[in-house]
Image (cartoon, rainbow, N blue to C red; front, side):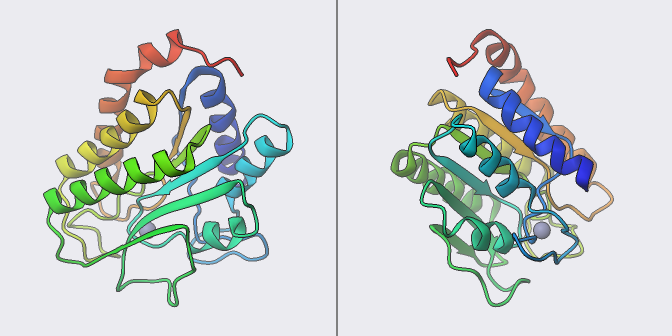
Length: 217
Ligand SMILES: [Zn+2]
């Protein structure tokens, strides 16, 4: 997990340089600055955001957490930081309880349909991006909203989740905002396929553009 935390820091640096970077690990969103819990030892996303903010490379950071569980550790860690915000779409009746206060919390019911979920993410993400106007988005792309995931009750399909990941990348990159993605939770036998689908869809659309359009930072 320490190496993966370094990977999240590196992904954020690479995103600022090239527009898009993906850490094939990380997203330990239940860990806070003073504690670990829920399979999470290090608060990799806040660590990465704080490092780049301290260096003056970012002024405003938006975390987009679409893992099925609430990112309580991220929320608790960044709450004192006026420059960092979190949009979090999570299954309401699920660990952790109680939930942490957040900037943009979107609790959803277990029986939400795929189209309803994608519409919810679409609207909430556009609103949060326009409100925060971040210069870096860190996307926690948990695959555990999958219908066969044993730790959650949501019913999304492989295609729904690939569509979701591509939607997030499209919103962020079309606004010219650097995007760092981390994988977070997923506990089904097919979880790796879900991440593969999403990453392949993102790279097919954005990899060449990301390399060809370095930011000025
Ligand atoms: Zn999760």
